[in-house]
Length: 136
Image (tube, rainbow, N blue to C red; front, side, top):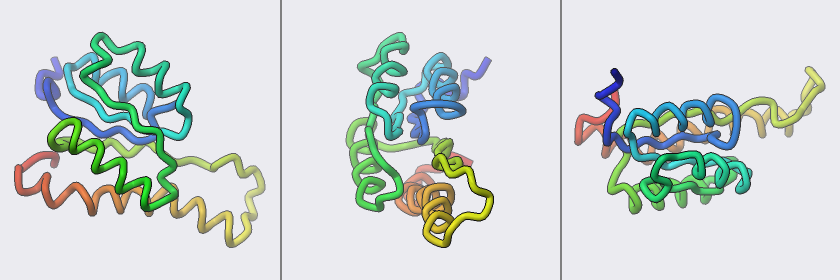
């Protein structure tokens, strides 16, 4: 089961908790090689420590609200794995904001984290993935 993911190279954002954490655990069990990223170094280290062979995977601490951090993530991931086959966008959320009436700055920040970061990662990776017929 899930043999199609064996040896696939997978980038997972938001891997330091929640859905990203669970996706990383699943893909690692299925035999994929991972680039995991998040903002919390201790959590990424903990997650990578759970892997059967941590040396097959790379964790990159990055705040994807910053376009330079996105470029660094993509470059380090491609260098480590030689390319990416699958992208899992699991970053995002409310960034701790509780008030339903956000300020313009708060809304812009949430939009950048929840949408713009994923769009930029896709822009940087999908053309190459398409050439190799990777992903769907």
